[in-house]
Image (cartoon, rainbow over all chains, first blue to last red; front, side):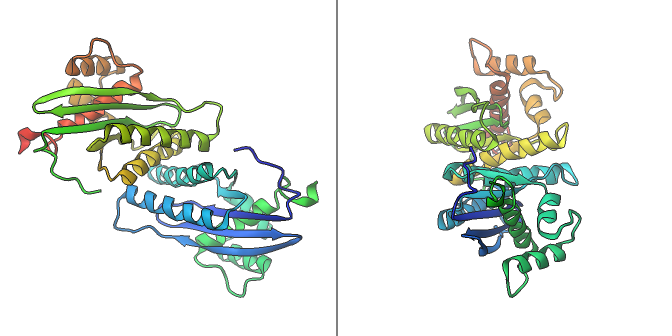
Length: 173
Length: 173
């Protein structure tokens, strides 16, 4: 999916996705005029007793509904290069496929950022721990409480990271 | 998806899938009474110039159409434990997700077999090379020509492997 010029948009909605097959975090933020606001955040937890197919189908249905509801202009997806073992990498590939499929079906471009890049965008450090990411995201978005669970905080960080990407940020016109 | 008792079925259709995001092989076989016949085989090749999302969506659409057309009672999927590197493992995970998603959506159970098990089922050796697999599959199914490409031959081997699984084979009642 080609990325249109989103820097000039008055209203821009970005959905960040932290992909996983057990928990998939989402964080939707909007840029309205010069302000950045939280739109939605949370996590999908497919039934734990189901097999992988049932979990993937549940995530597919949930993400499709989220995208249909908020109609984001862009998805911001965590890019993982490797996991601790082949089994985890396979699971990440499966979760990624669901996100890419929903985006393609809805005609929404996807930008991908390594976790370190998303962390640096919100905390200034690529090595920030999860509580720091949650705190900085909450401060950035003026949230009264820390976003829960941490998968949702990570997803909000991914969405904010995209909004600061020179390809989307009006300051880089 | 629970596996119903398929051993007593007079007519049983199994679709074997060799998962890949560049080439996805398929091989559909049927057991009609005591005979095993080839129904269809080939490979999906999503557009090479598209990004991963476009390729996955193309595979999703193609596999969904195949399943809608042949209405298999079961999918037989290659189970891979690891690939040569993390990038390949991620790609396999993505391709697997498409197969599992289509199966779940259509309510079709999936059985998985490691490549060595599928090879052994058709050639007697888990270490058989691709030409041997293609030759034995052709002989088994009475094909006048070797199945092409090798991804399709591997998929037919997966389907035949499932038909010989004690859970499906009427000789094991």
